Image (cartoon, rainbow, N blue to C red; front, side, top):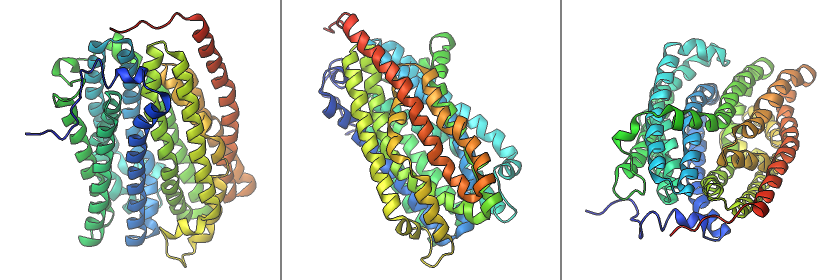
Length: 471
């Protein structure tokens, strides 16, 4: 019987992982990033198609209901990021150091936490669902739509969070194509089931939610199957599920705190944003933000694909003390992310009406408001690729404090106060102006802290002895 997973052509110690420290930078970055980008673009595409189905099949209240459920979904995702990103960073560094047994222990510890922590959190959230939805801004009209969608999504959130976390490990294990396949499987299944459940069966919001949960379950099964397969370089074994708090769990949580804080901040941000939109623009403004989020996801996903593809490469080479390669990887990634964001900015400024019509009827009263919101919200896109890449650099080399600073600057320190203050002067437009203002200030901070770290890496290049040669 043949396996669905690629068979390594040489031993793990001499092929897929060792190449991370020896192959030319650009081909290596492309090999690890392109599968991640493709997978994430497919994910972003199915999020857009999901909202297109909801917008045309259910209406603006359906779009607003999904938007209101988003902060609760992001809280679940934040727990998987806390565990998954921190564990994956340790995993990559240990692989670079040649400590493979410890890397396998990290994988086992991470798997248990990735599944059970979000599971417990989602069960707690389900017991207080209506109050939580009220807290995030649900009106009487929107509450039924948001409740129907969120109840099903939360019930299946452990599958989603674990599949996302394991996909990062698959990539770091030297098989980015397998990680990409998990995303594509989930995305294509979600699109097909959306059409069937919403239009074929007439299940409405429940159909959209069930399509998402089932597709995430398939992605989870794919990634789990890889690590249980003898084809994997690193195996998931029962003995490694026992938690090692001093050596693995606490360092893992420390490194993962920055992206966890960013995601939790994003949830808090969305709560405040939705409440502000409801206060100054009503349910229609919340629906517009759902459309903006869908569009921005397809711009940001290639950026996240680039940085996630680069992160294990940076971590491995940092662990192997090849600091010149770390610098090359950082600058290559920063330039690529900036190009992507400039492209996204150009599309949002030139074709906003066409973007809105993907989700709304051509004569919808929401189109003029959406055009203005899209153009303003994306004004600073060309300059935020650098701080995003800088945050992933700090994560990859195990420095959570500066990574957290960059994450919190954009989401908490600037954006939330601006959302609260600007509308008092400019009304609903002030909420839209808050985004480019916070992005600009975050970029200035990133220039300072990242430049300092790059100088430290250059000093290590000149002062450190050459890395040991692996036989």
